[in-house]
Image (cartoon, rainbow, N blue to C red):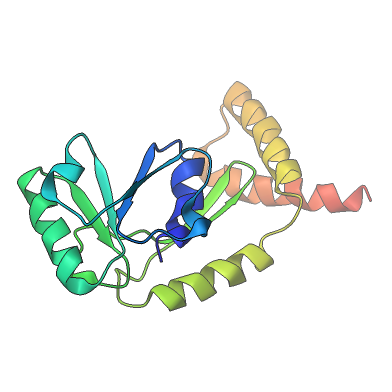
Length: 163
């Protein structure tokens, strides 16, 4: 469970420490500090975000220790022991789409993430470049906001007329 959160945390620049008595090889990655032991409240000292991916009784102890330190806890597949939820995230170029079910259905969030990732165009870099160019013109020409969206759609359609 914890391994599924690592990519996003590392991509965001997090300094990740994993505390667990048994740590699988999938967690042994560059940028991840491994501490092989049972959880104790001082393990959260210095943290600012906590992911609990243990049995409910351990997640409950993590939540209590986190609450005492005013930390957010994402308890993987354990909403009663969570104070925050990580949604399914799609990152492509500078476009980020986040899907959340409020912790109720993580598998559904994952399916929706995969569907949205497959649906998004592969050439989003070109879309962003067209939007940047259009925006510069709109600002220069003081184009009202309500006119910009249809104009952007026209600019995006022109990307495909050129090919």
